[in-house]
Amino acid sequence: MNIGRRRPSETLALVRGLVVDDSQAWRQTICSVLQREFELTFVCESSNGTDAVRKSEELKPDLILLDIALPHLNGLEAARQIRKVSPGSKLIFLTSYIDLDLLREALSIGVMGYVAKSDAAFELVTAVRTVMSGEWFISSMLSTVDPNKPPLP
Image 1: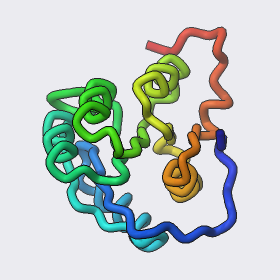
Image 2: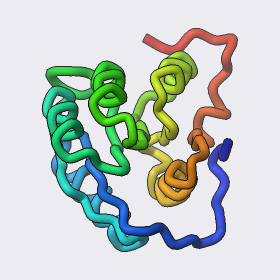
Image 3: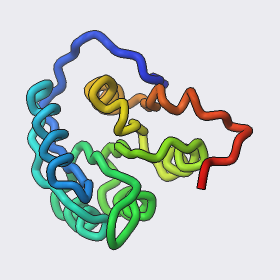
Image 4: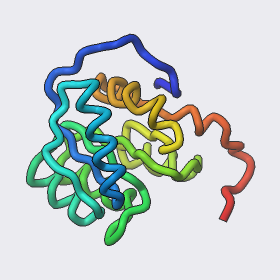
């Protein structure tokens, strides 16, 4: 498991991706950053969980980056459904939620990466490389969470 560490530059084969976030500006930024780094084709973008499940079933992307806070169907439930309709897709949560319980739930669903949006500029490329190579990636921001303290409301 890679926790917020950088790996040497690697080349990934052509990867088809789906970005799911309710912010169009954020989706475009993520697509732009990752397309500069990889031979990554974003087959689609989605702004809500229900649409993400539908597009995942239809397009079977290699990589899906999704937020937890999504309209219509939250990211956790969307991830559960995506695992059923597109089991070969690798999922990475890209979220503002820094919470060990959410991380545990995400991992139990089969999500392979968990990246804090606040760390995306430093960790997203590494997270994609790590997850696409079949390993888990957990944002270094989660190492600052005290597992004995309840999350803030």
